[in-house]
Length: 478
Image 1: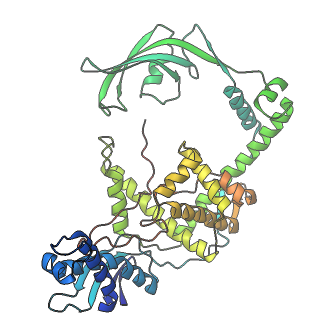
Image 2 (image 1 turned 120 degrees about the horizontal axis):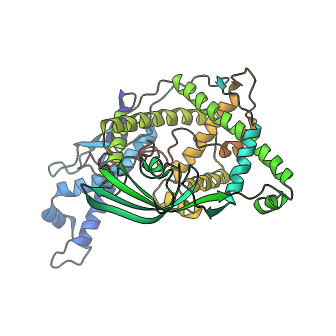
Image 3 (image 1 turned 90 degrees about the vertical axis):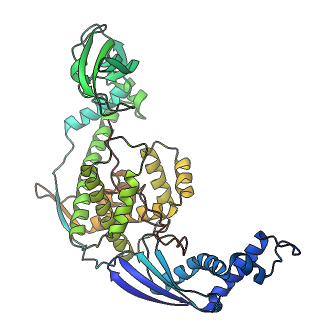
């Protein structure tokens, strides 16, 4: 087999594959064998039908087309390996020549158009200089951490007064459109000021006591009337305030592994300081990545982005106002940004010879499963069953590549002080930070789990292709 590659543009190539009949023949023989098991001819046992009778039944062209379909993946993968090409999407295939009845042992020729990973020239990424906000844990930060911990162990006490911000209330709701009830719910628990229910809710219930009600206009955020204007009647049936436990030794023993409140406060102070470092690390990491991407010209294949946009909006369960021009622009920007980040960080990982350890994959699975609210084992099984195990390796590898670029960077704060991020860029510190920007956890590189495209599905159906998960940000919902 011989192959020739023509580069159409930085992300598109045409591969012409010449397949000698001798290499196609094993697939033709296998096709005859398979058809012999399926075709019944009087006087012949199943599987023993001669090839000439199969030709009479289905035609030699049918046999050759099936043989090409079976062998195309093999020929395609050989051509990719020979020419060191990494595809991003399913290829478009056109058969230019093949054996026919009049030339049964002719060679075959196939033309394959495929989107490929662009080649980039990696700039000098060592010593990038970025500035971050000066941050230092204050007494207020320490007190806030203590109050949040006390709130976790607080109790709710019913009070006989109007509801105020921070109070917990029990509500009955009734939604009306043109005077007709379209939804209702009773005994809902809500914290005043949380802003997690309907627009206008907080203003309506603030100042209401148990047994009082109010009516306000809003836009429904869910159900079959989502997006419609409605009149909502809300009744407060109970008002409760949170009572916080005293910050003493007894509380320290209840809420932590420490015996005294002073030990607990010292630990919270340490955590606040570490949190400041993480905040600076996240800011520095984002700025380093932004500066790195600005230094590289990354061609973005339109076909990949269009596939991701189509897949994102091809969701029958999406809300009616989901598909808008503004949202499509947002999805496109996010997908293009994620693609550029991926290409550049993969190049850094190659240059730094970065690998991924089993323990790092386990840490990644645990971290991501927590974000999705899933059991780590179930999350791992989901990744494996969906063929995204390779994606997981790629994500961890890119995280480490970005941490390496940050390790090389010169980071100062707005007061001119050098910022030590050694704890942040270490594997443990990096994991403690937020997910890398434009993370594509649910969005593997288009193609199979190792980042390459799947095999051609059919010589007769060149347009068939599986699109990748979109790398866009999740839709926000009230």
